[in-house]
Image 1 (spheres, one colour):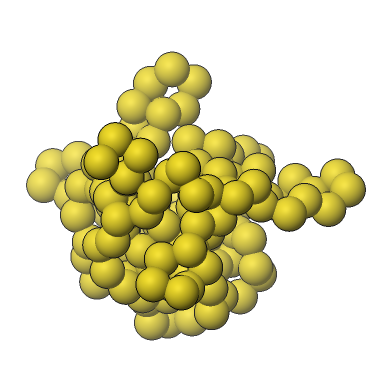
Image 2 (cartoon, rainbow, N blue to C red):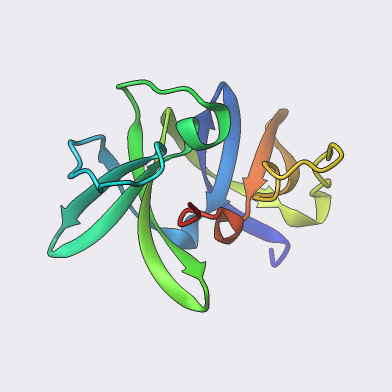
Length: 144
């Protein structure tokens, strides 16, 4: 069982992604965010989550340059410069919690100088579906 990892799977640009369930704090409906001046266009703003200010990032806009008013916010913990931060990511939908056999993980195909895939840890098959495993700490949410 030690090679198994429980994932929260979600949809992004018609593909299934997975993130370690231990990182997830909660799942929320998309809500109006307070905008942050001069922030990148994938930064929707911040929300107040039980007294904490949480930045919200739209992964659809960040990686695939599309936006949709529908979607959900996954609130999770990321490691950034040695500190744990709570952020929200907007995805198309949340699918399920599933177990992945990490011993069967395949490396993600890479293109020359492909910077957009640095957050992909690898690929794993779950119930005959390919799931893209994300290394959430490698997404540079706070880049300019």
